[in-house]
Length: 71
Image (cartoon, rainbow, N blue to C red; front, side, top):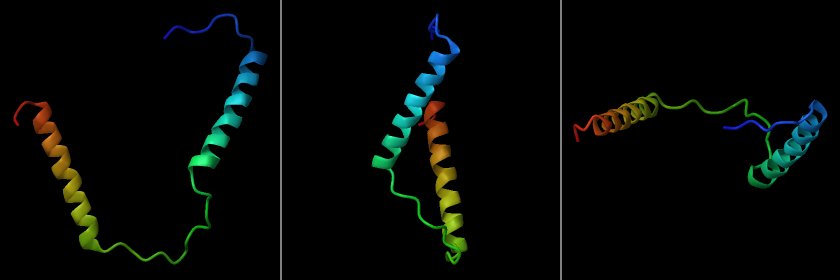
């Protein structure tokens, strides 16, 4: 990447402020509003946690095998 030349610190600060405002606008449009954290969230069942861990390992293994040309 080629760095832009000739920008001063004040120009960078202005650009940063504009980008921050744009980021906040996009986030407010696309993301749901933050809610209060739930104190009484039910725990995840152990079998679901292990099922998810196994699924992650399976997907990682299949991907690795495909990248190594074994599949």
